[in-house]
Length: 252
Image 1: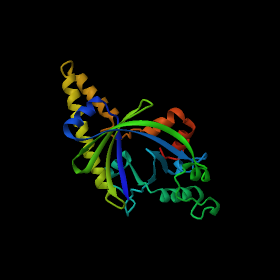
Image 2: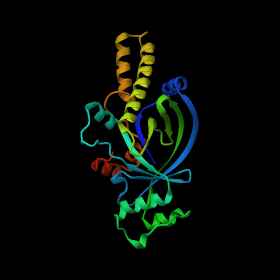
Image 3: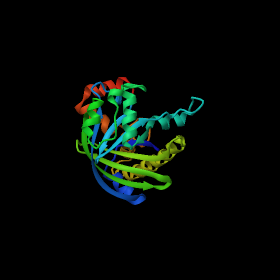
């Protein structure tokens, strides 16, 4: 089982052009996501994300990134803040069992025992799970050196976002993955800043510096601000009450 370490950033046509030059294109695909939770949000308030994508079930589970001493160096702490860390379960019986434990506790209720079934409605209804988010994404993927993958996503509700991702085995070196992501972000950021500076310097040297600074900040490729993912933006727009509860619980 693998752990996904990701960092999000805002992307543009310039990002695509740069990746076409420095990365290996894996192609483009489209997928439809449905996310499920109980009416009381027992899963998402604990940072568990149950979704169905292209007919397959996935459960993203939170992963602790604190080391054995409980302390992180300043640069490690910043890298952890900018990244998300999730273990992804794709085996349906294991998903059902894990979801049941989160909602009902380790003991659970024997009357709600779930078994693998192709009928989604059966196990969903037993655990009182309903769809709270649904959208389609067009994704272009690229790989860089050191096993780094970059995805450029365009959601059907008008949000564009990029993801820099490194997969590691469960129990693997999270900090090493964060360093790879940071290096990839810096490389992208430097190339984008260079392009914008060369374009703007013809007009005004001072203006070029402002353009570079603001583009860096909003792109999420440098600095210490985390860029919102698709789900954050979707909930903020269409389910503000759910979004507010997740903010209060420090999930988002």
